[in-house]
Image (spheres, one colour):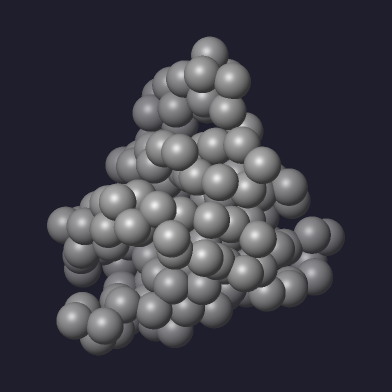
Length: 132
């Protein structure tokens, strides 16, 4: 389970809506399943159908997490025109099996749909997300 405060949840949606119609991406960090910080990272592909995190921003975020004593809890990205389900590319590129994959569908900008998944060795499972 991944627990997000209303502020973190709102920051997530604001980030992804700000880069719409492109895919947005980033990290969620914290401890014991509780997210304390969102790390938006630029999508260097500037694409509406794929993302690749900008390497320097990605490394800076991971180093800051380590210095803060936090764990990488989740990797998030948006599907601007698609469903909130992992695509075959998402499954193939799930290189951090311990991190929950949070996918946000922005098909309806007024009603984003947010879901979490575990992806381990190509196997997809649902992860519970709780906004408190």
